[in-house]
Image (cartoon, rainbow, N blue to C red; front, side, top):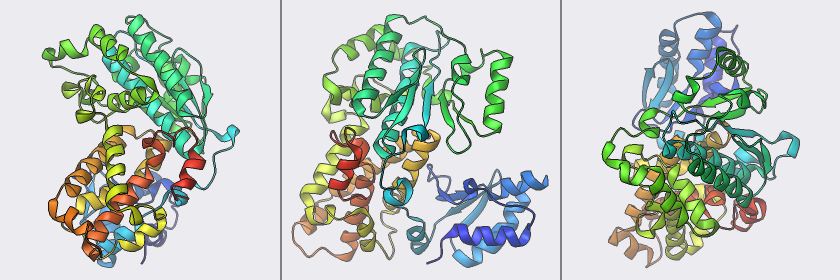
Length: 432
């Protein structure tokens, strides 16, 4: 099977020999499947280098790609987007954790830095907590897959963290600080310029639109330069996710309500569930911070843990297989549960982007849909009956293998033990 990126590179080199694509132009799975399944920024890079028309360049590249691969191709704002991807092409694009993260943790001097420029009173308390939760979740994922990172939740300086316990300590202090002094302000962005990264390992900086608008011209220029040279990735979530305009939600989103919820959190697992819930893809207009207190409607972390347990009970032999070997069971056509397959098989690549680029909101939406669809499939009586009476059919084996592939790809973030000792836990689960 031929993967997409090598062919794309050959086409661009032939049509535009003066341009060399960066690694960032490779084909990547998309977070929003409604917009497409796989996409590339190659045409945008070519247009930038040649001062040309990205739309026209993308159309030219597609005219050569489409006959080779099939599927539905389109241009979206200069992006080359593929939908209805043939299964054999999907499988050729799959990457495992070992492919993407390697077998060992990063050396400390190469650890990435993740910062939150915690807004002042220009943002509601709950919005500040959501930002801090998203930043902390990225740090948790970096630890799970790379061993350590440097986490800074303003106004505290960045600190090296290497376990879920380390992250939770900083997160809990940040939440308590926000709740204790809800109108406090900080350095209006200067903090974020003190830790510039590098093009190989840029610093990820989280903040909000309203807070960023208050930065001085000098600070904004500093961030602009950092982004231009690839030293900084600025993550500013959309207001529709971060801010609520529904006044009826005051009772569950005001500071006193948040204090009551935080007071009920018990142990590290309680805080982990709440952190992942606060960073979930749920828009603020639908967010209830107390949801993570209850298993029947708990955070995405609980839902993923429950899916893991169900798989281990229903199909222990398949679930125990190493991640790479699970792919040998996935083939042929998967039209009936296409979105589930796409979510499951692309989770490692989406997780890599969440770790490296701070794409937490897209990752959360993907894992929430994966968990929801996974539970729905396992709830089907005919499938449960079929799994209880081996041998498992080819079609059902594909479903089971894809679910197992997806859940094992994120076990390091989901399980209670994996975040404490990621390398040992991943070896025990057969991920490496």
